[in-house]
Image 1 (cartoon, rainbow, N blue to C red):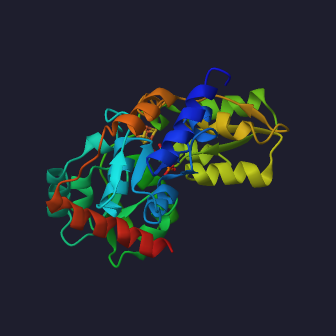
Image 2: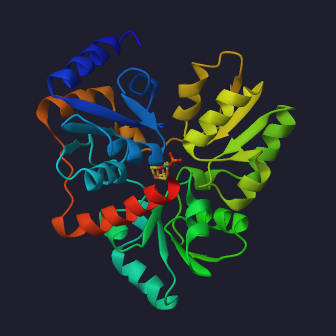
Length: 304
Ligand code: 13P
Ligand code: SF4
């Protein structure tokens, strides 16, 4: 932290000078999450926050699809991402042409796409969802069959909770969450009796079955904040435990975690560079903005 202090001071000063706000995902490292972020949250919270910011520049500390979502919702604002190579294995697993193929296979079924998608895929979808509202969004569709893309595990986890619908899915996966196994979770219970296990719904269904609670990154954080378990495992990206552990000294965090290499591309150094240089600016082609915004706004309307 001592070595971070000059960067944190410089970033907080540059934000004021450049009329910028920093939106940061829960997977950012503690120095970003606690040191320079103005708003932190899960994908849904960040998308809603993006509709309300007053500053002329948004610096998105997260991955590219998150910055694109902010731009889609705020085409008149300047949206910067400190490293545009920060991608996502889910977003890169599907194209608009793949959505068209799914529509041809299941005629008339609505396409619910996770926000972890490109603007092109959002524009080809009927509505978006995030891990915190996916059940609600699928349930709200006026159709017996619902197409969910691109996360196959999220879709299967949602399908179990919405048995009245036939959910079909694309076989994308998150490189962080697909690595966890139910066997690993059972071993934590044996090694740490009484441990509470909470997991992200991008994990395989047998992992979710083994967990005590599943929820979005914000859902997981709220669970730990309110229940204050004695021992907990957060089955997700590594920075989550680091960020909450600072607030909850009485809780023991057992840390089996996987790093998202995309999220970890964002650093104090490149945030400062983004603020000073105005790069890298995120743009979304004009012809996609309207349709992509419609899919995201429909989601926000269902969630409110
Ligand atoms: P949340 O919406 O739960 O924050 O998830 C985003 C994500 O990329 C998790 O891997
Ligand atoms: Fe994508 Fe997984 Fe990284 Fe989230 S954790 S940004 S879903 S690769």
